[in-house]
Length: 430
Image 1 (cartoon, rainbow, N blue to C red):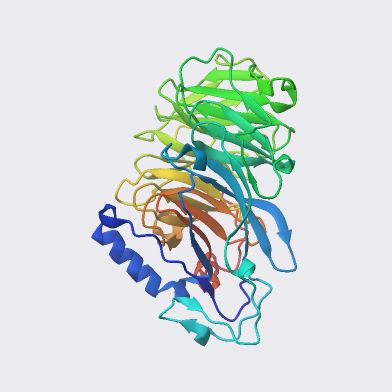
Image 2: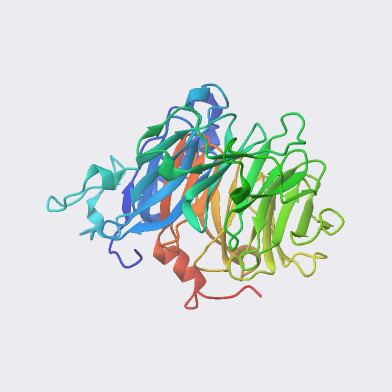
């Protein structure tokens, strides 16, 4: 999409949010909106009935119209349990359409107007829901599809369970009845400790890790479920890695058994699931200050981990030496709590971070240091961002979801990000 002669912007106004939005944020949004045609090669903003706590681009692509699918959820905080759900929507990022001129941008309606000769279907313009599955119980905190079979979707619930769904079992419309294919819940679990995040093993089919507020990291093999009860009570591995709570897990991309987790005590745990738990888990107390919320292995360099904490600090670690981070920088100067970090799957030095306070998404070049690291800031959300996901087909396209009920799919202007990277876009970090 970087070769196009103009930007593609479709902006939907956010809902009225009242006094919960500060004047500073409202002014920032107004300024952002005025400058969108200069900032983006593509922008599509959508408003849903409820906010989504999670998002993930699927790996498939309809080449004829550049249509991509996105995994999302509806979070009602149990205000309306019948609306709690996960769903799949599709969007075209319009790479197949050649626009004529930047003069087509309508400043009043804040979107590009096409030539009369261009026939654009509504389905290609807006985010379209394809499948919705009613959530069995609790809030869907995060959902991710299995890499080896994207029809299999794993989710973690505020009730402590891990629910697994097979998309093909739920038709093409709304699936009701609170049905699931598998529920993973340890038989010795007491109370309602919340499950907050999950990650699928990139190499072993059906191996899923989840983490909880009670400090446990569980590894499940969904192939071992009881066909009569549709439940799994026995984990293949269970460890307590941070008694104050574990917030995120990440599998090493090119290894079958190395799993990292992060927690409220500023700890990072590196475990080898081939070994017995606890005594063989290597737990590092880090220089983070206020709980680590997010962790992710680099997709191209297995030795690198990126972490983000509750004070907005980001750190890049070489897992062979946790004495000092390779890089340490702030998402902002306001100690905004990091909600999500995601490595770019196309460029191993690029990472994006989002926060729960100001709702900013920032893109960083970790091959640089200091002020040179920041490449781009997306300021279109008016409340905290819950999750972000890179497209697997266009290297700068991101989906971000916010507490203001907005779902944004956006691609920074090529001249802004590529020029900052320079001629070599395949820089390595180490």
